[in-house]
Image 1: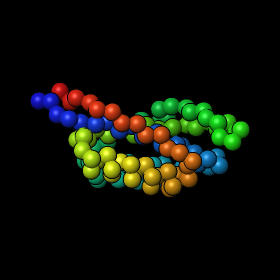
Image 2 (image 1 turned 135 degrees about the vertical axis):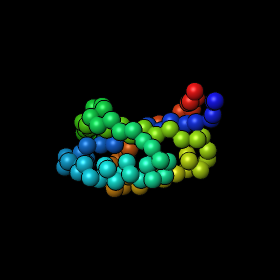
Image 3 (image 1 turned 30 degrees about the vertical axis):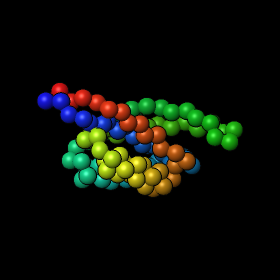
Image 4 (image 1 turned 45 degrees about the vertical axis):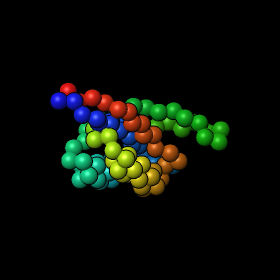
Length: 106
């Protein structure tokens, strides 16, 4: 059975922009929010290293990858955009990278 689904991938930082470690418990709260909303999620700790420039300073990020597959609805896209905004603030980030794309679950 095929259905219209969307995968969201959110890169969550292991460190605040000032270099302090993000407590594992705080990342756990973010994951729990997604599970409470959608009943499932995957998290890949230490999934990527990111490098980016802001105002002539190069930043290095250690990133975990939060993945959730949900029905492709406007309400779910809106919820995930609000999740990103909340966690951008809570994790004291200039930006949090989130991508989404249509998937088919077979």
